[in-house]
Length: 315
Ligand code: KG4
Ligand code: ZN
Image (cartoon, rainbow, N blue to C red; front, side):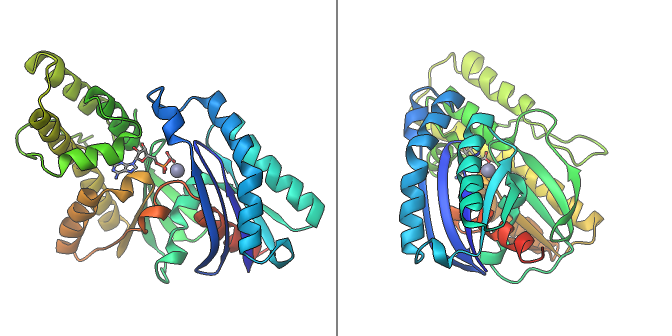
C-alpha cells in the first residue's frame, strides 16, 4: 500500500512515500542550523520553519512518487512533541485527507521510531524495542506489532537530551550527539570514571546524575579550562557511562521477557559506539540486536508512513 507520511513533531520537517519496505521518495528539511544559534530547539521558530517548508516538500515528494493519484493512504505523526510543530504537519495531512478522501492514520511518534523495522528485515514479535532519542529513553516489550507494554522509561532527562547538554558544556554545537561521537573517536574512554546509573530493582534510566558529574568535572577538577584532549577524553568517557545502562537494561529486559531480539531506534541509535557495545554484549548472550540505517534513526517520515501503512492496511 502506497502511503504518504508526514513528520513535524520537533525540528525536522519530513515527507515520504513508502510502499512495503520500499521508500519511493523521502525528503527531510532539517532546522538544526537555525536552532544551533540558540543551543537548542526554540518551539516558536520550529513551527514557523515547518510552515515555510511543508508545502515544498509535499510537492517534491508527491511528484517523485508519481503524483497524489498514486497514494492510497496518509499518515502523520500526531503525538508526542511540540504542539505548534505537530499542528503544521497534522493540518497538512488532515487537509489532504479531506480533499482526496484518503484515510488518515494519526501516528504516535515513538511507535513510528519502532517502525524502522519494515526497512530492515521481517521481524517477528515478541521482541524488545529501545527508543532512545532527544525526548525519550524507553524500553518496550513488543507482544505484537501494535500491542506493546512499556517496561521502563527515564526518570529525568532523556539520553539524547543529556548528550545535547554535555555537548554544550564541552562547547560543541547543537545537536550534541553527533558532535560528541566525533570528539570521542580519538578520546580515552578510561580517563574519567563517570557514574553509571543503576536503579536497583528497576530497568528505568536516569541521566541527571551523569550530567551533573560531567559539569563538576569541568568546573571544579579542570577549573573550566578544556584542552582539545580533555574534550575528547570527556566525550569518550561520557559515552561509556551513558551507554552502559542502555545496554545492560535492554539485555536484562530481553532476558526477563524471553525476547530473542532487541530493536534499537531513535536518534541516539545512530551512534557507532552504542552499536558496537550492543553487538558485543548482546552477542555474548545470544540476543540479536538490530539497528536501522542512520537516516531512519533520527526523525524522518519513512517510519511514520510505514507505521501508517500497518494500521491503514488493517482498517
Ligand atoms: O529521534 P530524534 O531525531 O528526535 C527525537 O525524537 O528526540 O533524536 C534526536 C537526538 C538528539 O538529542 C541528538 O543529539 C541525538 O538524538 N543523536 C545522537 C546521535 N545522533 C543524534 N546521539 C548520540 N550519537 C549520535 N550519533
Ligand atoms: Zn524522534
